[in-house]
Image 1 (cartoon, helix red, strand yellow):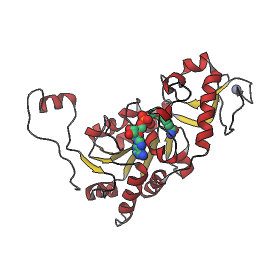
Image 2 (cartoon, helix red, strand yellow):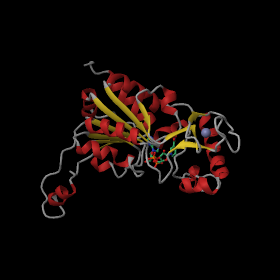
Image 3 (cartoon, helix red, strand yellow):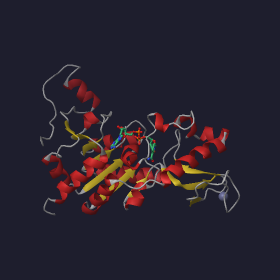
Image 4 (cartoon, helix red, strand yellow):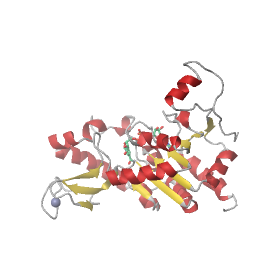
Length: 283
Ligand code: NAD
Ligand code: ZN
């Protein structure tokens, strides 16, 4: 254990190194570490030496706070799939239906508290000089845990945007009045989240890209790595020389590009990793 993976050698022809070179990727012998095991010493050392770190989180980090992912039966609301509700077209067709779904999610998430995984990332932020946490989550739990150098790239369930004047405001009302309207101009409010088919805020994307390109390590936690462009973030960083570390109980499309892939729950793996890191002499 603790052996960093090396590029595989040998092969040749189109199924071997030639194709790998064409694809611009190296296939790694990934170190997969099961839940309950100590994090590899080489990973602890990598993190201890990392001065420029990006952390990317997804719905998986909030599972242990009782917030379901979109996958699985708990992700369903009435009989709708999120892809049918989290779109501008759905809101145009039936804003009440979409707001009812958001209201239901807000009511559930209002009860949720940050878990040891969120809290470990706050401890990690304290140690790393150049740190950025990019989250796809809209639940606000990283902020509540105390993360500061944070970009909520898909927005927040707790912010609303006026469709007429564009004003963005915090709104924590649960239940939210149906339908909610702008206090300033009377226009219809929508959740200030990025829906399927919508682009990320360009300023947020620019800041994310800058951090990814200079990162030495990218830590990817609890994301299935299928929603773009977040799914590509770690690969951009890797192309610029960063090592990818993944924490997820299941393999993802990113796993084979990782230097370390820890197969476990964020709320167990992250605190253990932080404890080992905090035992290292400080730089
Ligand atoms: P996803 O649902 O596609 O994937 C979740 C991943 O988390 C899976 O790979 C799963 O194996 C992993 N996982 C499950 N339990 C875990 C645990 N305890 N520790 C670590 N990993 C665990 O989520 P996604 O990749 O974030 O993409 C879905 C989209 O849905 C995102 O855009 C996100 O904004 C949105 N979403 C957000 C929330 C939230 O804010 N909490 C919840 C559901 C969906
Ligand atoms: Zn307005």
